Image (cartoon, rainbow, N blue to C red; front, side):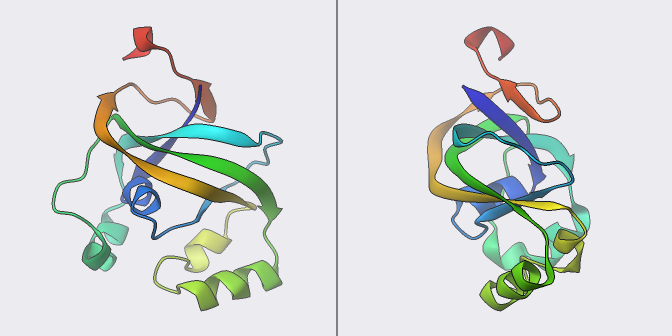
Length: 130
């Protein structure tokens, strides 16, 4: 299954249902289900700013959920305005500096996170990677 590694706290914000778009500098034609891997990297500024949305201990280096990628939206002024109205704490001007927003639906948290080594871009998970 496809996997996308996402820095914390962003990965947790997605599986908690707070963040519905993931931002990347690259476009993807992939549509469908994928696993969400919480990378070992941490966005410390976001951790402080968004602490009210987060549980106490964030998993690192683990697959923590899954989602369906339904669209890859080019960043535009209208898209940025829509996101700001939805939640201007989660979707900031930093988000808008990326070229594409991946629209995520059917987001599910995994009860027992799976240890795995991350990778750039979409990658394939198999039990031997863990």
